[in-house]
Image 1 (cartoon, rainbow, N blue to C red):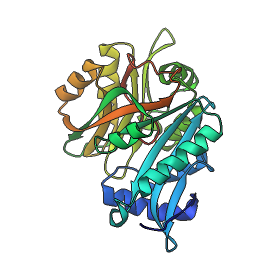
Image 2: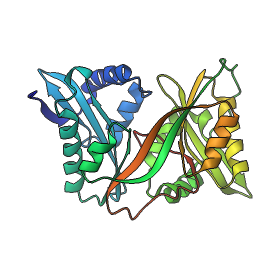
Image 3: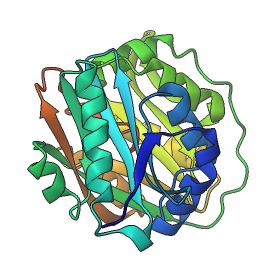
Length: 280
């Protein structure tokens, strides 16, 4: 068995974390890793062997009522040694030690049995869809809308306040922050971020198919990337039909899972796509 040490992540670890991200074919960037450390400086952990980072896990706590576990990565050379399990156990102990009543994550089919053994239950299914297209010519970048109302709306849609994270996303890609309003009332909104492989649409929240379609089409117009990802909620079949009609293809399945008292379940009837497996 590998004798690994476990400690809180720091900025120096981002370089190694990004190498594992690239090796796994994931879409996160250095900015995403920095964002996670900024939001949760004491809640992200690394596994160390001979001074090198060989595994990671991150946590974010929203309002002290809901926490998110993500970025569970282990260097391919060290898989099968229980390192991922110990990282996950450390994240759970950290969060439950702070009294957080509900922990959530998005599980791959391969990871789902591990999470079930550690007391996680299934909430709903998610599908990643991808669009590959010719590079889009540059579109004008309108100013980012005032998102105060969006943040209030999102607190209800998600089930907890994640304003700090959404503001960070909007500041990084203001042209990918979208709203649809009627008589100054929010009917839908979407955020986007530039990943290492693709632009990512999410969260994508709408009160109707028409609003959802408007947000999707405007996102595709403003994004100039050849590749676009979005993680659709399966219980919203309209999301699937909309992305398929725009040329997206199915990529992979995820399961949203929770441990503890899921008293702040998000309003998934409004959620066409989640923010992302690393953020919730």
